[in-house]
Amino acid sequence: MNKWLKYSLLGFLIVVLTLSGFAGGFIAGHSIGTGNQPLISLPGAPALVTPQTANTATPSDYQTLFKPFWESWDLIHKQYVDQPVDDTLLMQGAIRGMLASLGDQHTSYMDPSQFTQANASLSGEYSGIGAWVDTTGDWLTINSPMPGSPAEKAGLLPGDAIIKVDGDDMTGIPGELVIKRVLGPEGSLVKLTVMREGEKQPLEFEVTRARIVVPSVESKMLDNGIAYVKINTFGDKTTEELTAALTDLMKQNPRGMVLDLRNNGGGYLQTAVEVSSQFLPKDKIVLYEQYGSGQKDKYTSLGDGLAADIPMVVLINEGTASASEIVAGALQDYGRATIVGVISYGKGSVQTWTPLSNDQGAVRVTIAKWLTPDGRAIHKIGLSPEVYVTMTEEDYNNKLDPQLDAAIQTLMALLAGTPIPTSMPTVTPVP
Image (tube, rainbow, N blue to C red; front, side):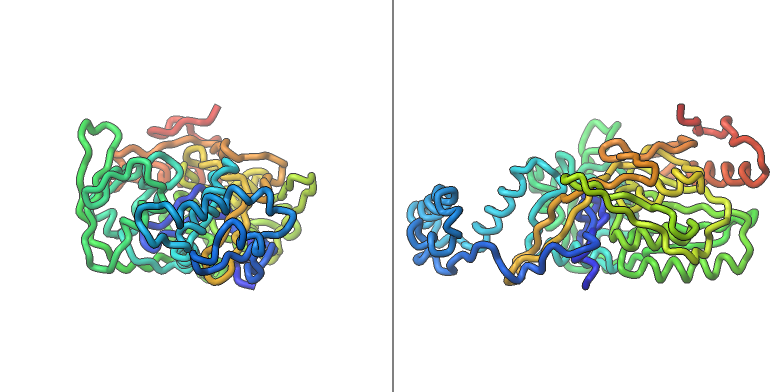
């Protein structure tokens, strides 16, 4: 079974502005259907679809309920000024509206393009400007440009809200649709107008789109025998890449490790369990899933972790969401790692992605909440670090990383058996 038929632990609709991706949920560990059998079959030709003939396609129990729908369908085909209308777009719009009526930002419809993009984002290869973005606000907002990406080279910064694309106003346009406007062929230009906090007037950027390959895991040895591992997403190759990275790092006998989960919007549930298992003893609870029925399932660590004993600090920020919050939350609950950074996003719900018939995209539905091993619900709350340290726009501009600096200092204090210092620049313990 493909992982996208499982739980997506993608966080708060952080997507990659390339082939976009982030789908705000996590792909379920069990399938709820393949989409091969539609519940309602719609006739294909407009002339055949009337309130009367539609009854043959609508289950008898729902014919009365759906009568206004088919009346509306018929009126559109008979009266709308611009004919012929696109039945596929009407169908997709109906699904999108139905799911939006639930009032859950993580329950939604993905059209075929969005569904393809969402899965492609977890493979680590993209085509676009190279930025993690948030689609949940009034405008599509840059969460973090990827290092070395066209977005970074152009000067886009975290918090930049895209208000125009190629001169067209994006006010009121759903983030997923704005993404489509930003995407384009490799080598082409896109003009972005952004609002930036502290700037009185909008800023304009021209970005050259490019093909981007993003490793899900990056690692290196730092000074003082500190191993550094950054996980960018919980995708298809993460477990394999993390195993290779830890194997190499542990051969160098590191004294401690910094695990960087900043701007990691999530990915697959099983990958989150596998990643957690590298740092925990066997059979430790990684998370609970709490369903509306009251049923509670648990996921436990797998054992044979390559770094189950090494002293650790975990870095998080406002872009740390869902699957990455699961890992950080489990390590925090067990006292396995000290958390440094700022409060995480707070994505504590569980979604399934179910592909629909005839390659018509997929439906994403929230089916549960997840809890940390101690039973903490972090949805819309987030995880609080033990050591709180921010990054300013000036830090980004000057290529400074006070959060990483604080993580290293915290780890050195842990190794020395001394209290975590509270006088580090810009560092304040969480009350």
